[in-house]
Length: 505
Ligand SMILES: NC(=O)c1ccc[n+]([C@@H]2O[C@H](COP(=O)([O-])OP(=O)(O)OC[C@H]3O[C@@H](n4cnc5c(N)ncnc54)[C@H](O)[C@@H]3O)[C@@H](O)[C@H]2O)c1
Image (cartoon, rainbow, N blue to C red; front, side, top):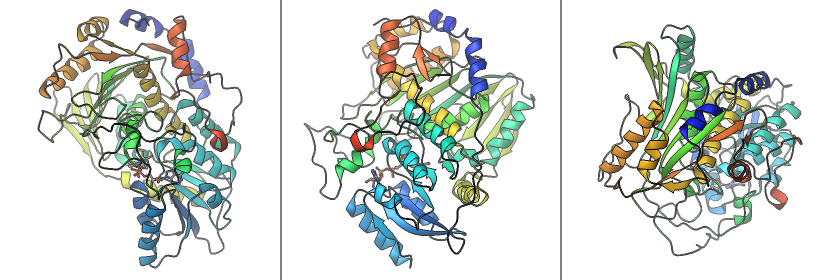
């Protein structure tokens, strides 16, 4: 399979008309809808998927004004029983469900908060809307681009209810202020945005074959729209929970896990209302051999025309044997936005530091309102208007992670010298790659003998959300990838809301 060279990459970026189409198409839906509400005015909330993140959501609703926690749902009966007893210990009586579809039949529930694994998000969002519930859906919105599009289309079709995505940086007043600052032109034009996910991820260990599913888990329900296969992992979190993030059938690695937040912030700063004209990724799972499929080191370049968005994932520490992580211009998990006259550093908690060209701090923005995202969902339900965390925005940011992963997934191992040569005309990519090699060296990964998986530079038809181009074999492989489109499984087929999607099945 031939990889596109940097020159071809630059050629493919001359598709101005494509970008205009995107801009015209990406009207954001205000999602105004008629009021819901139960008898006494409290919004009756159910939390779905309650192991880790869902447990936090449950606590939020212990005392969230204007709401009442009325139901919990999990396909793991042990998790469900534990959360029900914790909730009852707080004096709150809830109905317990194993099957989300049964929960949706309950007329005494107004809203669902979804904290199930990624591969359930789009399906559960669409089903929730079809059942007349308001929905808070954790990030990422989708496991693949196509189902995310179906979720967006569902919000346009089922307008009685609202959906807020769990991309909580959208509730950061600091980021909003910083974006206004950049748009005012005080720092000149944006030259590039680098989103960083430098977050230590240990090996999950190696099994010798398919692993047993704990008896407490209904694995058919857990699998939902993904192919039904036995788990091939059994790390510290067991054979099912959490480590699904590192398997392509359910997650997308750290770019889709932690990284979706930083992807979303970076795209927001760039002011890009849709998908980029092209994408290329390279990386690998370095430093240890384990069951996980996704890379722990990844560089993806999303080739927006005005300024590129470069994403860097590092799961290994600063140096072998350490726990600390590297920082790039002060950020480990964060975003750096480079402008002509200075740069901004946006932290994981949504606070911002603005620097001038001589690296002097001009301003610090630290109102720290990111934690209000859940309360903003309640406001959205009360006013019937989503302000922070629009589904269309979550779709595009999630899709960027999927597109980046598709390039990686259809790539091939190359020597680092070959990769360096292919990207040498691009300063930003070369800089990211050079720092990646230094980082691997610090972790005792021999950069001379280690090969990197290099994905092709893929041209994107942003309006139709699919890959295009003259490299037929590459384009066909990319369009067939399940992170672009997966239709679901049996009773868990993703409802087709928009029929004319052209992505290959
Ligand atoms: N916004 C944030 O900052 C943030 C932080 C952490 C996690 N998350 C997101 O929350 C989600 C859950 O993460 P986690 O770490 O709790 O994962 P987890 O695997 O620990 O927990 C998921 C739970 O969902 C349950 N589940 C699976 N399928 C289900 C179904 N069909 N119906 C009901 N329950 C089902 C599982 O049994 C499990 O108990 C992920 O999508 C993750 O990306 C978001």
